[in-house]
Image (cartoon, rainbow, N blue to C red; front, side, top):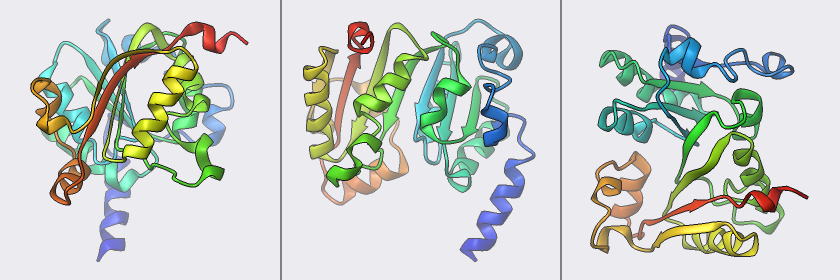
Length: 228
């Protein structure tokens, strides 16, 4: 039954006007919407927020509902998961939401320099093995890629239930002199940040119910860290 649902979701994804699934060949010379997301898709000049590893797209859709004056793009490689968020956004006739099925490392091929105003990383795979450190979505390798698409001073928001990954990210920020704006461990026992608490992903609810504390931070990238 699960495999049949996946096939049905994959087929329906092809019908959604706001779902983009570029193949590797399509990105060899950059994606057709690179640098043109506002002018050719959203048809406005509103700021764009990108969520990488968006899963079911709850954050992308939730933020788009909360901030209709902004545009939102959810990105993940799992098309069957993104189906849920994309279907919801179409059912609600939302015009400020898009989804891209691709690997996060391809963001420089999908978006132009300075095209993204803000970025969210929500509950990524912690990649606990040392051999896979470079695959962590907050590793210097990925921060370099985000730097290529973020506007100067663009904020990165990061939520995770994994404390070692959270601490690793704090170490990366300190080592490369990025600007830490806010760091909160155990978000739901923290007084404030109600706007961050309002939207909870499927995994966030699951981890919370299992007794894991949710950690959250905001930071900005140091341009000098990427000038070497």
